[in-house]
Image (tube, rainbow, N blue to C red; front, side):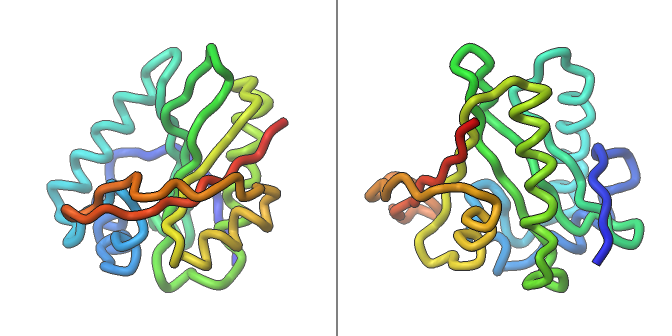
Length: 168
């Protein structure tokens, strides 16, 4: 399936809300609420438009566009230029799961981080039951570095987290 990576833009709010508003996506992501409201979508687009104007943003997000819609997103956050590292994050609409899209989408994001931002380390956290996300990272060359026990609070409950990383 074909997709393109691009920056967020005004007008993305409707397809963003439609495709991200899924309990299955929210379950394994730290900052995506469910239900995902129009207000959430407007705030996210506004935040990304502001980040795009920054000369040295701490966060960079791209749309995974399929058939003219926001079908997902991939980005780097906590970009630390001094220590040359950043965290990778991503999500994809359910109807596009198990098609190899996410693995193909994160590869250019990794290249961007290593080549344009001159990062040396890109890492990602995964909830242990999220087998699909583990496979995506492994197929993209990430290595499991360890399990952080009871390190993340989501919906008032403590969870373990797996740390994956890829180094240049």
